[in-house]
Image (cartoon, rainbow, N blue to C red; front, top):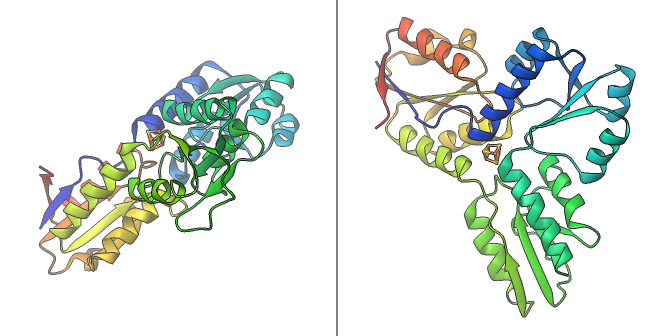
Length: 285
Ligand code: SF4
């Protein structure tokens, strides 16, 4: 039984940077909290908690717990929240991904240039909530084929980093019909698209796929859905302990991938467990 592991499985650049720095902060400080879970992976949150990094879900909770240092996660937070944290006297470790920072910068720039800012993304997502605060009053958030807002003379577009490029192309072609002037910042991060592309290629050649990552992780779930849509038997697991030998009876090739919030050590554990079930690792390309 061959086990093919995707090269792009696991942490993206922004998450790796944030997790490494969070562990480093834990080594040097006490009273450290993240504002919201740093990533959607329960095993990593537990590991950080063991090192002394707690999770608080609001500024009020940070105050109740007498936090000293607050870690801002990769998605970023609204500008007002950042200002309030500083005002309340917390020490900030801002681990907003540099790509998200860039999108925040462009949202602000478009507002300052007098554009009506339109964000392509999911309004409920923390990254988009942060972007909205930089885009100021009158900002509109559009997702997929949703109805467009009333477009003024000058439109400015920024994009939630994990949106597919196809969605941006579609939005631009819709908006161009309503305005004479339009400025577009393509703030999409290629990491998600590349992982999806590789997962599709791995899944097409596999009899079964194992997708590793938090059940509450949107990008891991997206990978699992993609594999299912290709009619490949798919198992979305969080840890190696969930694997069952009978899943792989008569399976010749297993594909293995993982979401952007899944650490290497969990992927390795899954790989080793598959090896114990008779799998031999094969590199993807
Ligand atoms: S997916 Fe891209 S934008 Fe998001 S944290 Fe990772 S590197 Fe940064």
